[in-house]
Structures are given as structure tokens and as C-alpha cells.
Image 1 (cartoon, rainbow, N blue to C red):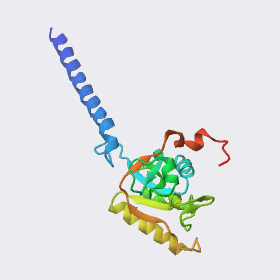
Image 2: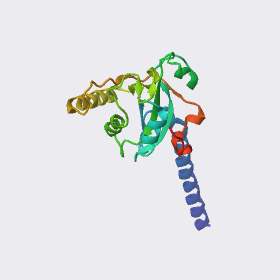
Image 3: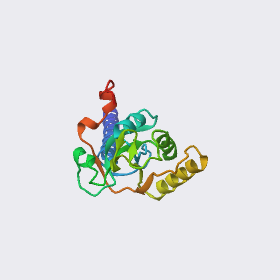
Image 4: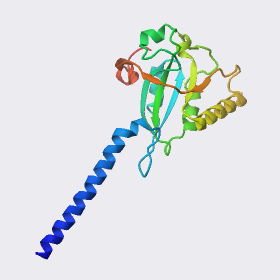
Length: 198
């Protein structure tokens, strides 16, 4: 009788522990995307927002970076709520084509992402990248807090001092307000269209 009660007690304890862990994990899943960072012993994620011309190209670059969890193409830096791609292409909404980068800072830092950003486009071109012309193709960094702002400004200063480019760096460094994902056919564009001439 004592053995049966002991086994039952241990079973109840194990069920309680499992239920707590499951609830904790589920809570992280539901609320994790709303927070800039996940806390406790869980993996922490952060977000970076960069624009450097066509978001298809920027997305393709950052999707292959170790430590990057997800990259989403979209729009930011403008005034119109929920803009469409066609609206942004008119250059009247104020938005830039940008990518939202979800990353694990223990693997890749914000500063390292910035180094990739600078190398993946020409930051001296105003409102264009190659054949893409318009304010929606401007070079832009949207920081989410003072730390990102400081790192971005320092990174831009270091690039200017390096003399890599003859012209001035025209990249905007502005506060992040809101990000609007682009339509589905823009997501993972390079991966889905590897033979596209663009």
C-alpha cells in the first residue's frame, strides 16, 4: 500500500512539473513576439530594421546570416497606415522598403548586422540603389532604443572615417515607429524565384 501511494505521489509531482513547464513555454510562445527581448533562461531575440534599396536583395543577404532567426520584407519610415506595395512605389507614402530582422544576439550582434548592412548596398546614393530610383529605396536604419541608436551612429562614423567611400554617407538613422509587412509574394522572394533575372 505504501509503495502504491509513493508511486502515485511521484506521478502527481511529475505531472505538476510538466504542466508548469508547458504553461511557461506556451506563455513564451504567445507573448515572445510582442517583446523586444525574451527573458529568464530562455533564448533572447532582438529586432533590427534596415533599408538599403529593394527589400528582396536585403532579405536574401540577411537570411543567410548565422544567428538570424527570420527576415521579413516590408515598409517603415512613412506616414500612411498599412500601405500597399503599389502605394509605396509611388513615393508618396514616405515609406522605405525595409527588412525586419529577428536575431539572436548571443550569436550575432547588432554591430555585426550593421557591418553586413553597410556592405550589402551603397550608402552614398540618395534615394536609389542601382536601377531602383525613388525615396522608397533610400538607405535607412530604424533604431528601436538608445543603445541601437548609439551603435548605429558610431558604426556610420567609423565607415565615414575609413575612407571606403569617396562621397558622404547619406544613410538616415531614425527612430523606429511601425513596420508593415509587404504582401506575401514579396516574402522569401529570392528563395522562391532563384532564376529571376532581377
